[in-house]
Image (cartoon, rainbow, N blue to C red; front, side):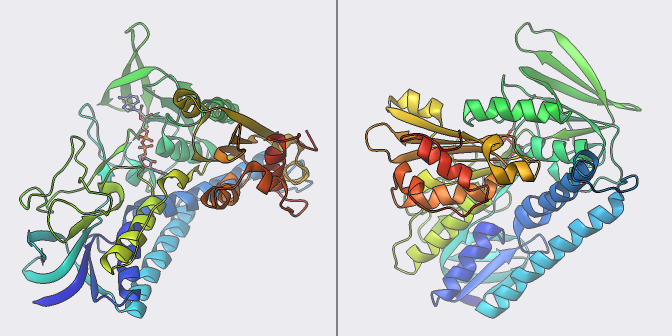
Length: 461
Ligand code: NAI
């Protein structure tokens, strides 16, 4: 039996960051992980592998669409999917191996296997019993599969199977126009598949600023993605091809669509199977999430939970922040997460990024606000790079000029958003960004121009 200050259950972005932070703060720490590799969904079957494929497929698109205009002549561009997947796999291995190295460096014990909480301060992994003063549950989430469909991860796939396809489908139907559906749908569209997205709601990416949503859908449609909105998928039937049956919500009419691959991207659910949570009196809410207080404490004394398994956006960086914060709290310091400044990024091309309030939220809350908007069309760098689609939209308090939110669609939006996050963390006004010198020529000048547009006006508009 081994004794620790902290045992973290789950080695994803929340768990491994928490474990390293605990060790850095002088706590004897172990991290239990059953997948056989550290990094969780994000590194193994999520964020990182999808980004490898997004990047590769964007280059294919560039070659087809823009090389000629840029004066680059190449022969016919073809895709070697096996090699592309091989690159993706090597990136996964390098990253997961990197975390093992960080564990060794920080003296975090890596316990392989699935952990079960068997008593207060006790985690059992296989036959081994480990004791700890504090336990942190960071078991993440799993694909939420609707009852009408059965995944085989070859033809009817979740994001996991979509990252492993052996060949580019002729026709892919994506169920759900959320982040996963649009990122992976656009990968296969760019690689040559016909892609049709069926979404239950009347808009894509629910919860995002509506103006960005509409523009985003227009741009994706221009790239060739097809959308059927306001449609509830009822079943996916297997034959020589797959038949997706759906009902249009407006008139209940029934329709069907054929596909050779169906990607089910209808959300994720918290993962608590085999954890022993309920037996130990740890409360779950009606969506299966572990209930925690403001200090990430569960109903079991000495047991905390963070990341996808608790409430809030299912984002790797939100989990990481909570991992940091709970480590600080356990070490007797002041851990804190600013939930008002958590960026969200969709890694399509162009990227979509947002932070803070949407216009719709501000209207609902009755907040008087102003909008500063700047189109990438008027940004020199974006034009030079043939990437001038989209805009930066900054929302600021009408009275105080304090930045309340930002919504970007365009080149490097996922990087540009962080300047606004830092500004918001410091309670900055739009004028603070407007008065900050931005290097020319950069995409970031569009952020400054949007900030100027909150005041006396953008220069290049
Ligand atoms: P999601 O919750 O973002 O979107 C699912 C969509 O499926 C919704 O729009 C919903 O209305 C639709 N839907 C559900 N049932 C349906 C039906 N029967 N017929 C038609 N449409 C239906 O879920 P998604 O995209 O699977 O992502 C899961 C989680 O992973 C999210 O929390 C997301 O934020 C996170 N994630 C984040 C990424 C990022 O930050 N770039 C990348 C990948 C995932």
